[in-house]
Image 1 (spheres, helix red, strand yellow):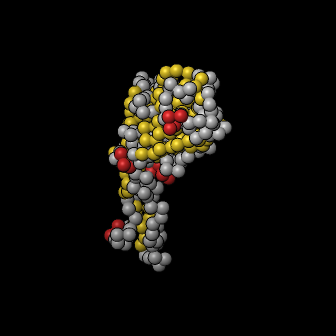
Image 2: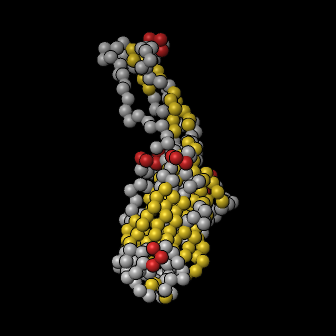
Image 3: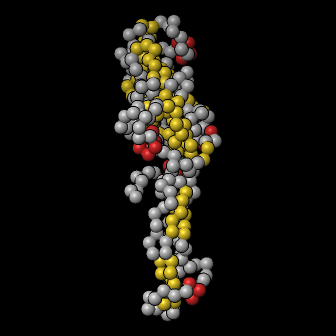
Length: 301
């Protein structure tokens, strides 16, 4: 049987950790009789908990088989049967789901996968293709990204105490990439635990250009007065944004304010400059992990 690919150890946090070593007892060198063991059989199941067997025989010094009663009967004697676990029955993402369970007549929809030992609901897209894509379902009202399109006539001011007011003394010739996108699903890589912020398959752009998820900006003001906004809301998914993830400002006279709540399952950002924007650290990406405060179900498949 081929081995499964290695993943980061944190992906198995919800599973019982196996021992990497254990004591073993060899036959005394002067023993008249000794135990002899054969190779283990294959696991009784192709996924989930199973067992495997091996032949255990009692031999004399000349290698002849004798009664088992003549060999050491202590609890340390070799076992004929032990538990085994080749892989989880639940897939780790939509590609595994199709590969192991749905070779034909695959249907796009919601499925349960195993992430770091916890059951997570995902949406599988393009299931009739070779490599389907994995998404998580979101509330489009609280998951959005905006590049604000207005520019102040007097850029070294911050009117209305920095609050949004579309009747400002502004022009509409702000950022060329101005737009507003809302997301009902975002694509995820559950092996590297990252959200693909540039996938707009299930995004709606109400005006202007497509804006990447978790990104905001503007060309509004040359002082600390950001108007571009983004929202991330992973509540109900069992996932959260990593604590150490930072947003990086890009542009001229940039400023940003990032507010985190609900154990980092919800993040609201306000970013801008003249012109400026913010987005997740491109070297790390938008990294996510299991949110234990959402009480996801533990399961080994």
